[in-house]
Image 1 (cartoon, rainbow, N blue to C red):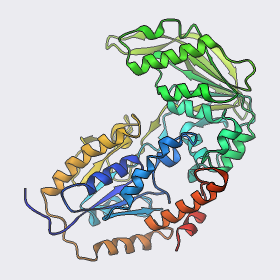
Image 2 (image 1 turned 90 degrees about the vertical axis):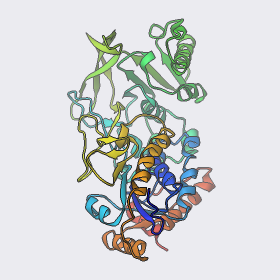
Image 3 (image 1 turned 60 degrees about the horizontal axis):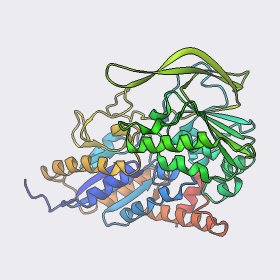
Image 4 (image 1 turned 180 degrees about the vertical axis):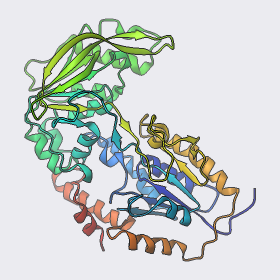
Length: 452
């Protein structure tokens, strides 16, 4: 390996969520002299930690303190309001950087593929979550909360999050960083029941134990689980993982206790149910559910099989939480079947100097911490590649020239100092009310706040 320590390597990280920050930290920890510029199309960093994690889970959001430490390190810069494919191109990044890392996540939804899916009142969880978290793309969503029942399709943590958010007591909501426009709408909501439908059984549900357990601590909330779907002894199967057995014990506990008839809100779990059709005259009025049974295939995997039996449930709001999906980036290879960028341990297949981390690399799986191991794998290969070649010839003013180029292209550019001003403003607004922050969601206001 040659020694190329005389000039720094410049790496661009596109995307400022957990995977992007873990990649940046690993690059700055490398034995090589590496400078990292991070880009995001939003003014604010942190990705799903800011715009995806449920507002009533502040402990999970506290991981952002780690990202703040990375952002303060020498050699790191943040640039917000930079949209790859519109403001700048992939080719322009490759001209200015020794390597480019794509950390853009999974920005859209998986589709149900059923009639009525696009009726008003049928909403993808990615949009609903963005709405209550203050994502600028979703502030105008205006979900119809003038209905007594919401039906949530999915059996993972996102399904549980959106169901919980429409049922939380006002006092709990007002203690969070839920965006104000959503806070007002949720407080005034008519929703009293959230029906969570999973296509397979309780053993296959993807909830985490912590999220299930905390339902018992929510005031005025009854949890309704069908005892027949979680019979006594269901958690005694030694072939199940410890986490699954704990989940089944919690669900069985809810089933044995039964829902409190005096509670003002109810969360109902129904397994072996798949959406077949969403109906309504101009808006959602009901959903037809297919009743499933489970079969184990030759590969050992458990599948839901339609029995032909149907149930019709009245509702004005369907929240589709069946998974996220990646989107193609201009000029970057993309596997439409998996919704990911083809790669070999983070190196983009058939490309030199281009890498991928996070959900756009592996699909929307794992928890926030999963992204650290994932990013470290990619960066290990990236650093090895950098060490095998000399950094591109750059003059001493290269970094300043890059920033000048960005400011010419992006009139609303937000740098790290600008983000820190936004952050301080939001926290300051929240403090008098006992809230972590009051989010700013308007692009123009965010830009003004970021200016000196």
